[in-house]
Length: 465
Image 1 (cartoon, helix red, strand yellow):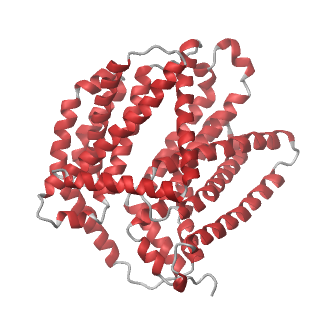
Image 2 (image 1 turned 120 degrees about the vertical axis):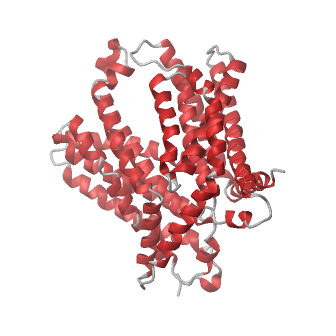
Image 3 (image 1 turned 90 degrees about the horizontal axis):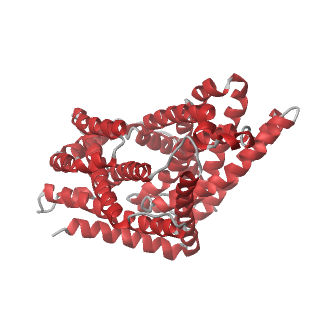
């Protein structure tokens, strides 16, 4: 019983232990970053309890953050473990009932979420107690665990029905989410848990249809790829096809647009929401620049860091082919990062929407800072993606790269604001900085090339030929 669940959990554990053995210092750093961030979030909770502002952060807000975070994670995990997984083909070819295998995959996603929630919530509770914030831990834990279960059910249901031929099946869950957002009442989410359970049971019975629909689309796409093209072009075509087929580019466009709306709103009204009236004069110039920075940061994380890592991490099932094909690593890397051009274009809607709020006079700076941040994100993420090529997607890896980039872009933002506000001709040094980034990008490609060199058999390494 639960053989598929046990296999998935063992593979996840084995993958994590393998990464810990490969780079223990890096994962120690990852762990420190996560723990520090949780303590920081607890401090933010304390801040909004003791400081009078127009923005209030209470336990209900934390509940909704947790709920939607796990809902997105559940959709992503089930997509990787079932919808796009090639290994599932073997599992579905056994004598086990297909519905039983699919339900065990869902249970693996649910169990993983509960384990992650227990780990993170324990650290969060410890940090709250350390800051002397009184909470009723047992009742809240039960309340939150029901929210995690509900979010997992909704996330997996959305994933299944989104990739089905009949996407109208997703409407009931979308209506329920709209009610969640409109009512903003965690108790309503817990009370509607039976509805989420009924819908996930029904959706799991239809999950095989979604899997077959994706496989059919892949066969059609593969049949149309018969012309001979260069290696770099072939890799570019492969990666962009995946971005388009999996609707990733569309999600980039929507995310950048909504981020522009959110950052623009905060640019105008953020000081009234977060800062007491007695302190606003101290942050009058700082806050608008910070909200521009945060908007750009969210866009580049989603459209640069995430795809840069995924381009390499998703080679889990084809890594043995990459290790043995007689092509230079540099061509492989260039082909992959060239596909990021489309990701960058998909993130451009952020600029015109943001200009509506900040004014046309900030167009040059906003465009420059977006390009600068995008290149910096790729430069940082590229060697790390090459290091972990063929490994499973790791939330710790993505989160830690995000924290590193937050520090680098934060410092760069202060410097760039100073340059654009105080130098008579800021365009010249800004162009020079972008040129230096292209040099750094070349160095990043070379470093990634050296990393991949150690992963190929010596007889097939063409980099020195």
